[in-house]
Image 1 (tube, rainbow, N blue to C red):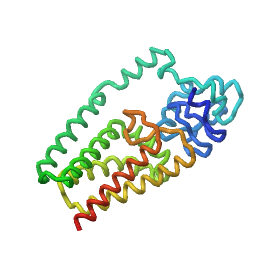
Image 2: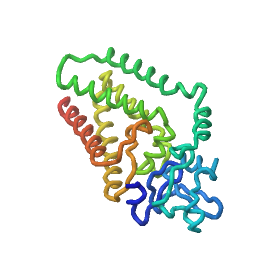
Image 3: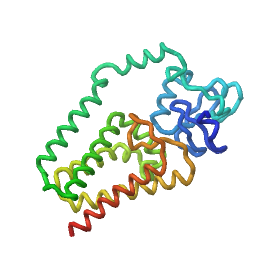
Image 4: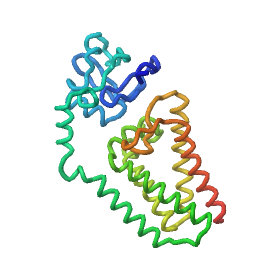
Length: 255
């Protein structure tokens, strides 16, 4: 089934990335007398840079003014599976240069930081030590995926996080919060602060996920950045609540 076939009547599809967006989506742009809605600022900017590439011909022909119909016949933009090889080659050229090596540089840098943190905070073999290692590596690795495409992560995170929706800079800071928490666990540094921050951040994130699930939003979870496409579901909610519970348990045990 085409993803757009099952969207609710008050939702539409972002013409750039294909993500389902609500009728009150704040990110909008006008082109040829039609208004298009987007999942985030990143997609809106891509559309405005080349609207003729993303504007759906069926929408233009239908005369719809909101840029959201007819959804079922919406096709992927050129260069994204539509068979337009020249557009794909142009995108590849734009990704050249040093920026193409950014994921590798981030991976190496985070691995070096994690190794240093482990050496600083070695704990004797115990369940608590394992939990520290697990949570430390978990946060570091998840921060890594987000940092591969920080702007893309911010676009997705804004779809359901309560603070990021109203204050986009928080979406850019969030991966660094995860990174700091991960290094804190691995280095066993100021653990009461790390435990408390983990509980607060994870529970707050869980509230946003719960609200999105109750609204029935069919979107991807931003937890893995844009590297892996994981649907926002109870799995993401369990992840947030599970990490909060583990941090709370260690916090109580340390007192």
